[in-house]
Image 1: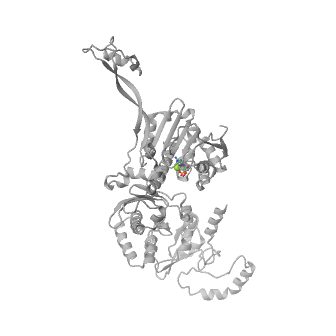
Image 2: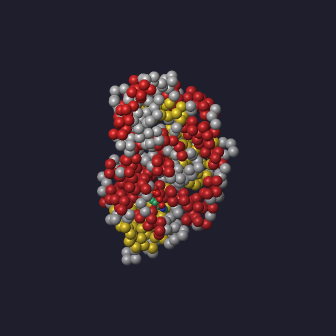
Image 3: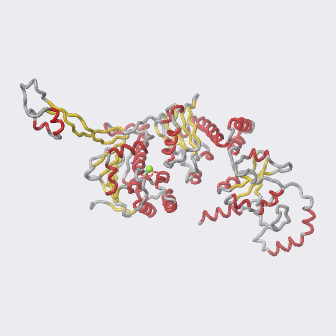
Length: 596
Ligand code: ADP
Ligand code: MG
């Protein structure tokens, strides 16, 4: 079109689209799930706005918050339409092409190694999955504050935007038209789409309709020469009415006959009853798993590690479902530092409010997924007002307790016993300590003595040698490497237990975690290791004084801080130790890997 404005995709987005187009990924179905999820997000947004301003919904059909799917077999077009918030011209330019989200390059990178396109939604680039099945896509959108626009692209590095002067006005919302590729013909079959919506969109809280064909019996005037039975079989005419034969006085003969005719109507494909409103006893494990997958946009076959579905009563009433994911989310660290990212969806009386309320869970629990639906919170206030609401504190308290209970159950073989002891310890401590202790008790790790199993800090302490003051640990990339470390030689020989910290996050944790109860943590590769008294230490120090002095001057002072006689080794003659406040060698390694 002449009047269209042309834009180039941002480079990373373009790369992503190339990958999708050329992908041999066989599960192309996922595009529909992504489009429905976007439609549902857009509907959530307009519904939220309508809480404080009814006008935004408009009247008649416009106020219907639903999703409609239509097929055009002849033109090979599949279209998905929502009456959500819509996109302004600027939104179209930004959201669909020019602004790469942080997940874009992360996803491109991931595709080059392990390549599971199924994860696309998690990285915030689900829209582009349309190019798995289409070679040309039009996005028609109408936002309350702008005119209707068409975005279109053949995924050739560019897209175009035009003011829409030719399509039917949408009123409000978005219609995505997929011009399907030759080999994607199956998505023009109603049965296929019905199956997919059932499979992928079970937990969408808006009705999804398909413009579906239906065989109906129609009464048409009977043809005099034929018996009605034969007529039903031979006649496929749907304009039978035009051949109406006037037959006024034949009361004994049948006047009409029945034929099959194809008509179209909107068929509702999903059941919108929210799973969290149901009685937990009646929800199956499979349903929870599927619900987790849809919340996390993680459609693998892994089950969540644990979940907790409960109703809180009292001053503040709410229902909640919390999940522990099977593995850490890919953007865990990023979301830790990003105030606006939470994995918990907040609803008020079934209306989605926000997934950016980080007031609901403390940061250390931000890996949990789930939702909270409260009847107590007010509906008709702004997000900012809600954020200040005093009930949130109560909700948070209850969520933390339930979350810790749930994690404890994963951690302990005998959860009840451990729970009681843990609860007492937590109860007996001061307020600030309480928080610390509660999560420190959940830490699990391997040690030089744990025999491949996981152990807790309490278990470690119960095994400490008499005279041992500190909790010993060592950090490194993996257990195999650590087992061979000279730092452990003597500790092992003397029977001390040492914790292996092998996850990069452990290094960050240990910068923060100074002690646990009365015990201090001691990195055995750092200065300050004390294994109890050594009677010969003073004597040795004296007799090797000249050697240590010479050595220190031989190694220029920018290379080492000090040279000391030590009792930490058994077979290795010497070892380089990190200063007390410096980065461990492992931390240096991690930082180096990050800057590459
Ligand atoms: P995500 O949904 O994770 O944000 P997508 O790639 O699926 O990522 O969508 C990109 C953006 O495009 C969305 O964040 C939204 O702003 C916009 N968008 C996509 N589909 C619609 C729609 N049907 N209605 C309104 N906005 C949409
Ligand atoms: Mg999306």
